[in-house]
Length: 92
View 1 (cartoon, one colour):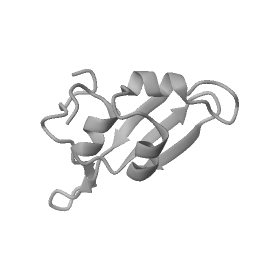
View 2 (cartoon, one colour):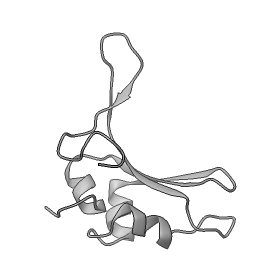
View 3 (cartoon, one colour):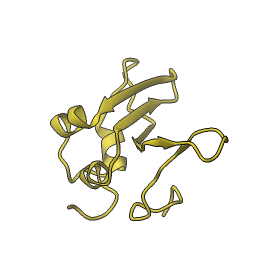
């Protein structure tokens, strides 16, 4: 298993997909785990991934993040199930 917040580590911890967003044209592209493993090296960080990915409008992607499985918690709306090993806060 790779260290840090890399694509390979996110997929190893159970991420279902990778989401790449463009805030210029509001385009969102979802790559399944199999597509992500095929398209990018496993040691790439999400910061590097968004710099490498281009949108249909021609600009670089604005955001790239793992998509975690969803869970229901007793009648409330669905929430992402982020593993503790990944960290709870976006900046951690």
